[in-house]
Length: 337
Length: 303
Image (cartoon, rainbow over all chains, first blue to last red):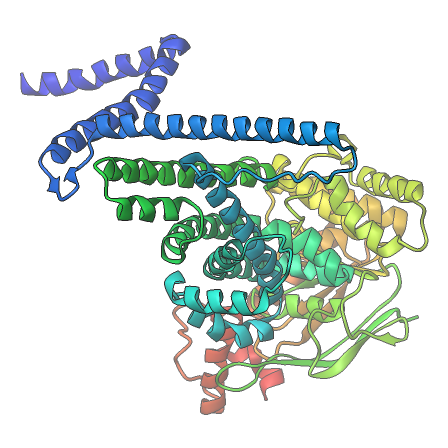
């Protein structure tokens, strides 16, 4: 009996295997879609439920910890605030234009002043400020890190000279840099009509100082690990330095470079929030800190909204880098994740 | 008339335990249009000879002279076909050849002439159908064809080939050997080719340079292959002279230069000057990662 059953099992398996290709492709892709959508959805629902339960059981001096429902409410509140503020701004500009038109009608030579609306920045404005700052800081850091990384990747002497410095500054926390940067910017960035606010420059430099390193190191590693064969090709052809960089060094190091860029952008975003919080520079970090200081019953909910928004933006920035990588990379088949 | 000459070439590689002499007293004269194969056991310094001619290594003693000028650095007049094709993976076949052509002819050819020249060379290696394919989209044999086209497009004085067909299957290899013979007949290039393959060496070469085992490897014997061209591999398979040449090479490799293998372990001190022998056998590993040195075969240079 026993032997019979063991013998029949492979046969059954065989039938099963034979049937697989006969299954309609649509059914197969349905399972795949279900896996891709359903499982994350289940994860999300479990998380929301756990959050909801946990939040009900945490009492703080500012009331209960916000659950999903409160956060949703606050999100709508923040959007409504933003729209109200925009309405006020529009009304202000309209009044100003009317007033100026009236003055000009009376006396065509009169000098009219156009004042900016000076309302409090809304949550949406703060998101915009933070995004702009992080992208500017990241771009600045990349502009330094990529060329420098290529140089030290190509030149062992330069690498040996700079490596201790890189290793020394890489682990420094943004909060340690911040006071120094603030003081230096106040001292050096003096202008009657500054193009950018000082707070913006401070945040930008702090972000750059911290997000420089992963791009620098990864680019250098990518460039220095180009295969000897390709270097020999370049030598035999006597390629000039720039041609070597453009035709060989950069394409060869694109994957490593993007690994660095993605790490850098992630760090830049984290550092920025901390810097804004500490230095009271406009942005999401300041929003969080202001709400914390404000201490109303809505505050924790609003902070939670900010936390989620920070997470979503961080995620989207990373996805954007991935898209850029697959666009830039010569190897379209490379698995990018 | 000597076209390319290696005179008393020796090379030391630095190792933690002092310099390791890979080649010693290599003398070789090659005439214009000659096809010379270098054959020998792995680790015997064939590639080192090629890299010296290419200018990628510099000789410690002696030197390489090409057309009356000493070789000091790599250059396109000594084009190299690398063992694993070494095409830039992000460029198409056309662009890979273009990189070389632009570099060599940027002052002497117009854009249209360069385009014709690139296409002409790719046609020479029968790659016209895949001009715009990238290396990862074509087979190993095709990649090597493009590598040859790139080298030919530089119009080199000497074509250096480092086991060009070593990584290919036997059928593809035969095809490419035929292509190479055909191109060589048309262009009359001077070629130095490294090979492991006795048949390949006899079929393609005018002379076969057989190298002794390292360290301090040198030229052992030189065999002139006096078979008229064009050569046909099928007709030659039964040819008495062809088989005689094969036999000569085989007997050099397997009788005179018998490769010491594992039972002749490298940490057994050999009978000669004990200290230097063991030392250099250890160093041989550092440089070539093969246990090549010990045994009676290395006698001439080491003594």
